[in-house]
Amino acid sequence: SQTIHQWPATLVQPVGSPLSLECTVEGTSNPNLYWYRQAAGRGLQLLFYSVGIGQISSEVPQNLSASRPQDRQFILSSKKLLLSDSGFYLCAWSRDRGLGGSPLHFGNGTRLTVT
Amino acid sequence: KQEVTQIPAALSVPEGENLVLNCSFTDSAIYNLQWFRQDPGKGLTSLLLIQSSQREQTSGRLNASLDKSSGRSTLYIAASQPGDSATYLCAAHASGGSYIPTFGRGTSLIVHP
Image (cartoon, rainbow over all chains, first blue to last red; front, side):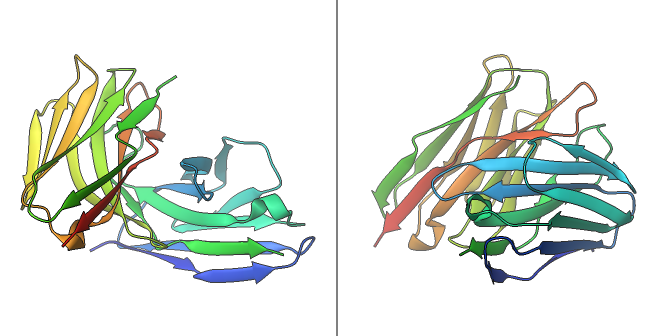
């Protein structure tokens, strides 16, 4: 069966520090991968998605970047965190490549607090 | 651009009631619609996925229906329990080669004993 791992679960970082959140998927190949952010009182905001190694699409230009160095690994990064980067970050994957019919599966999320 | 709306935003009911949560979407050209549950501080758990060719899906006390022509989906929860308390989100998966699902903002449900 397929599983998705996301770490760390919680993170407290000072303003201006770097960030690296990692997500890996097991039990499948060529997944679509997604990074979402959920801020307090707001809905899910899609940050990045990837349909293959090295292929990253950004939905919202901001202080963050994403990379996909391996087929089942998705990394969210920042060189210098801002207070506004605080939130709940969720990684997700789906099986198909735009053909539809495949559900979206989420990791357990990372709670990031920038102080 | 697809927009997904969920009504009501919050709901508080006594245990045992049958519930209907609503999800509407503006673009009927979808591959499927997915319902999720989110407990506080946790990730999203998939509940049901309805393909565009289907009318409904059932899992235990949950039943989700889809009416593409009217741009609506409903999640029916039978005999609600306190353990059903959570936020319920729907997501419409767009067709036309896009890989991006559009989420509603969720319905926060409290079932009190």
